[in-house]
Every structure is written in C-alpha cells, then in structure tokens.
Amino acid sequence: MRVTGSRILVKQRMSRTVSEGGIAIHGDATPLPFGEIVQLGPELLGDILTRPHVGDVVLFDAIGAIVLSHVLKDHVLIEPDNVLAILEGEEDNL
Image (cartoon, rainbow, N blue to C red; front, side):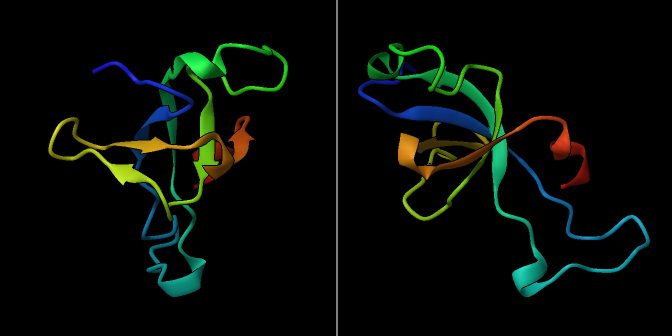
C-alpha cells in the first residue's frame, strides 16, 4: 500500500483499559487513540521542521480516521489536521 496526497498512515497502539492498579478505565477517562506513523503521503514531504516524521508516535482524533482493518490490521489513514500531538516519551503512560 502506498499513501497518496497529504494523508498519514498510522499503526494504532492499544490504550490501556485497566490501570496499573487494576482499576477499569471507562467513558471519558479512556485515552485518545495513538499510534506510530508508518508512512507519509508525498505532499507532506516538504518542510522538515513542521511536519510529523515516520516513526513519530502521535495522538490523533479518531473522528475522520479511515480504519483499514480489511487491508492492514490495526492501521488507520488520517489527515494532518487529525494529529493532535506528537508524543515524546509519554506513550508508556497511555
């Protein structure tokens, strides 16, 4: 699969649904989806300082994400505006 345009291919990681202390996390306490960028569309290969990079772990908005479970298990396609933050070391706490 080759990403086109300005889309980003992300391999989703699963958030914890049970805390380290064994407490179930439900509702609004559930963390937002996050994952590792696997591929960038060719339109995102411009300004190296402002764009996410392959290998970055990002927090993204699931609304508008295209789930690719029928093609690639645990992968989604997102638009650059769906990237809410690039996580730097915090992903271990999710």
